[in-house]
Length: 372
Image 1 (cartoon, rainbow, N blue to C red):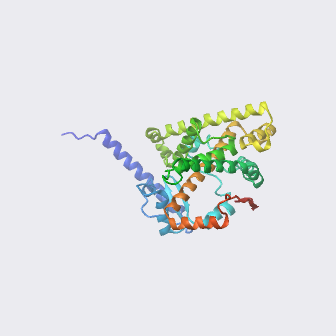
Image 2 (image 1 turned 45 degrees about the vertical axis):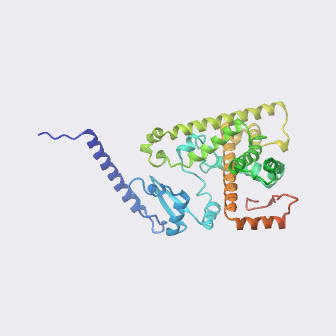
Image 3 (image 1 turned 120 degrees about the vertical axis):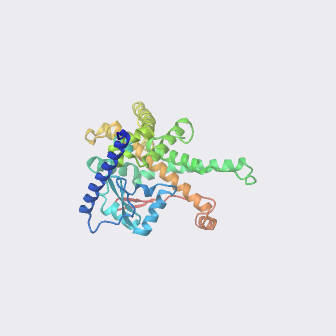
């Protein structure tokens, strides 16, 4: 009687042996390098994948991390594949990380999403710490986020907010002035509002909240934020990166990158054409014009078409998605806590009144930061 092993069984045994061997090597290496001052780690880490399995399931990620922080404290470590991730849930420690120790935390680890959709890690948020990052960050702070620049662009915010409120009022009027209260999808309207404000400040797009171009751009931005937040096999287990091609995520990233680049390239051509035809008034000068000015006047600035598109995309992503989500959550929490909503209404009634709008106050800058 002959006994023979099937190729699948041999392959499975070899894979188990390989995983066990690698896990033992990594465990010995981790124990030898572990410091007595190292932050605590959650229990239940698995071979190779570490704590990745603890972050899945139906529970939201920030809820899972919050539960871990309740048990382990405000600072703890997670092992995600080959990477160690420091989780901070205290604003005091976060301030220490991004002020006193900002150089240590300035760089970002390389990722598949940043490579494909972030112009090969040239976006401001993905650049490694160095001269290029410092120069771009300084340019953004001086020409986009400083108080004087925000004051010059104040009319953009005011006009778009007035347009936003007018739209809500006209919708209310059309439904009978309160007899039949209209249902409003605020997330979409907040998206249009933030796209209009940030779009005009960064790339000078007027009335950008409607139309096919806007919807295509907003969808691409949403896809970007979704895909960049996924845990990709390539990032955690480089040897098994081919799996990302099978799941389809790599193809989605390439499509999103193509859609965003086509729109940004079109806007940049529009800006160059406008600069050829006439001079740009300082009040109308958006950030893309500023970068083109620097590119044309200072060859040593190392600004290319790619850096212009990637930096503008970074500002659009940072200014649109975060503000829209914050506004949506703020209104949602107020509507679900009516006693707090009444307090807000009373405070507005007392300090602002019904005959004027809330005005933004720009406070003096302190230690290079902007206070709003």
